[in-house]
Amino acid sequence: MCAGAVTPAAAQTPRWELGIGALVTGTESAGDTNASLLSPGGDSLTLFRASHRITSGLGLEGGLSWRLRDKLRAEVAIGWLKADFESRISGDFEDVPDVSLTQGVQQFRGEVAVAYRVLHRGRLSAFVRGGAGAFREITTDQALVGNGASASLGGVAHFLVRQAPSGLFGRLAIRVEARAVVRRSGITFGEEGARVSPTFVAGLVFGR
Amino acid sequence: MNRRVTGALILCVLSVGAVATTQAYLKLGVLTPNGVVGIRWTRPIQYFVTNRDVDGVTAPQLQATVSRAFGTWASVPGVTLTHGFSGFTVSEPFVADGINVIGFRARPDLQRTLAAATFEIDELTGQIIESDIFFNTAFSWSTAAAGQAPRYDLESVGLHEVGHLLGLGHSGLGETEVTSTGGRRVLGKRAVMFPIAYPAGNVEDRTLEADDRAGLGDIYASGAASAGRGAIGGRITLGGTGFFGAHVTALNTRTGELVGGFTLNNNGEFTIGHLTPGLYVVRAEPLDDADVTSYFDEETTVNINFRPAYYSSLVAVPRGGSGPRIEIKVVSK
Image 1 (cartoon, rainbow over the protein chains, first blue to last red):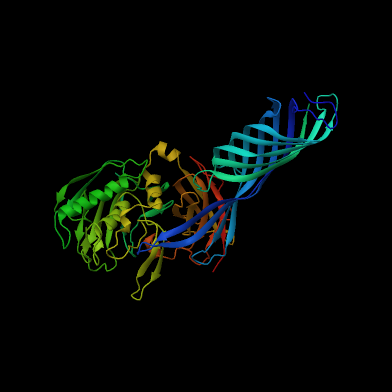
Image 2: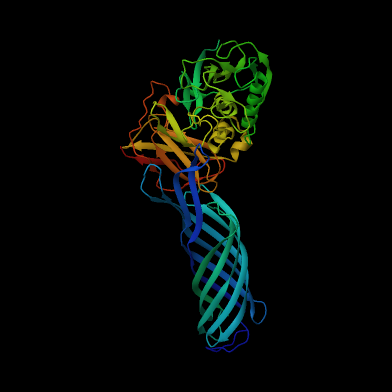
């Protein structure tokens, strides 16, 4: 149960919380691909080089969390974000100027996670959070669809803004989160294995 | 009674023939009253091999080499090809006798032609009725496993010619330079079906490349295999107008596979099929690394007076279909 004070000193985290926030992902390098011919000597003759990355993405994330134990919470989150696959073309054999080519991608993601409170000081609470989930990526032209799995580990900070003594949404806090998200599969440039991208979420949580 | 047309395709610089081309890689086609129809075998391919030994290659070695070439093409995933050796023969290739004959001939007049394939085709259906291959004894040949300069590798050239026999035209995936004798030297290539051979002694062309596999798959892959593949289609335009004969290459950013195609009508339209799904870089360039007649009829007008250019976006190729059609706008040189 939450305490009814503005600056609670309760040992327990809130019974439940509902949150929404902006989601930002970091840029991921995604390797290189050379368009190459085979020369008579067995060497490669490069027609052009393509250096790939997935640009920083922007989206929304919503979630529901509830208390399992005093400091332990379970969370379910769903999110959407938009980013670009980008290939930087260089070194063209016939001197075509360097150019960047992109294809937009939308990602829909879902995750279940647990969060453990490691700090509670005044209005501020801090958690470590780990989760696992799945995602679906669709290119902007809707031609290509890929599914994948993800796992994340990070930290969450809650800053309590308001704590009303009653009411369904009596508790309001600012939530800021940083995660390292490990993804596998989905639409790829050919990167082998898992890909890691930093992810940041900032928003509001309501609860009691 | 079906009308028939005979054409010829020749490896190395020169190609001649009345066979039209259709779609990418190229696939060979024939012009019918209903438009261009791709040529293909619709029955098992039974072939004879000439029973003469030549310098460096016995008849059994030729037969074994041809058999390996057929086997290499037949191993393309998703493709069903039935082929078989019918026996040795005294018949000559390039004679319309109702049987498929593969063998050596002396053609010193064809100074730059290593080998060639001819067809007899049902002009209404595109069915191949007969096809012969000859290897020119004006050149010396070898079947040595690691190659034997200055002899040309029979299996490499044979693989190319069997590709023609199966219905493939020439690929544009190569870069060349003109030599002092007026011929062309390969700087690099990425298709067995490129019209100019590696130098004598080289055996790199014993292995099919993605472009070769895509071309054959486009003709012979089963429905299930084709359903797992995708395509890129669109136009190449110069000043807003499409044109014939631009070479279009697609690079799969995941696998690094290169597959090429051509614009094959005056609207500048192209299709590259049987692609591995994924994101592609698409580039258009003039067809200037081999004689245009290696690809198209002599009467065909091909524009090579434009600068290479990339499509402005990455192209997503889905499984079993294609994304939105693209347009690459090029400018004159």
